[in-house]
Amino acid sequence: MKDRLYFSTNPSLGARLFDLLAGICFLLLPICVLVGAFPSRHEHRGHRNHFNVAGLLMMPVMFTFGIFFVVRSLRAVCWLTGSTLRVRGPQGAQSADLSRSYLHIRQVEEDGRAGEQVPYLVARDPVTGHEVLQSLRLTAGELDRLAGAILVARPPEGGDQEAHDVAEAIRRLAHDTASRT
Image 1: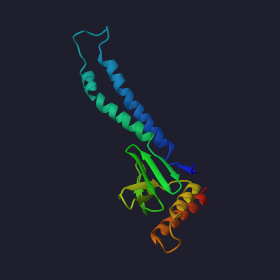
Image 2: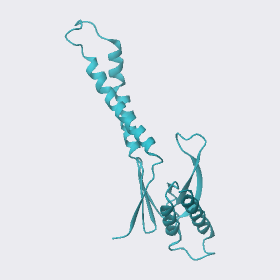
Image 3: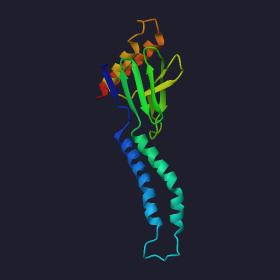
Image 4: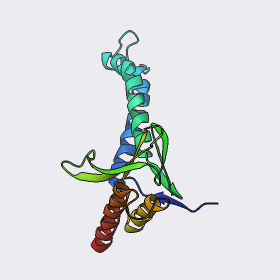
């Protein structure tokens, strides 16, 4: 069995908990509306509350939002097996062989973090053209292992200078991360 490294991809526990709680609230809201939509024995039989009717009509939307937030809280699972990076999210799984892909680092502004740019590794498969994005907000050991996976089957210095530059940038980021802790 190959050595496998799982990445800690989610930006913060608070963001994950917010998504999970929002999803649960959106899933429970239709149930509360449904229970309130039926008149109790203390209400008049012919009287129907308009809020309850509107609530019934909004149930599919609320349920959809609930599913979205719950899935988003469980979204990103990434792992590295040899030189193959696999990323699984709500849209499905993607993989890229880092030793053969075209690589660059892109700065991305993450949701909920106003103005904060987070570096992402972008690996584009040379055959299919599909891109795999991996946040570089990782531990120093994970970053070092990722840089090693990039260079595992590439020719030494000069063969693929862009890949060597990306691996060196990731190693510098790992060193900066290690020095902050």
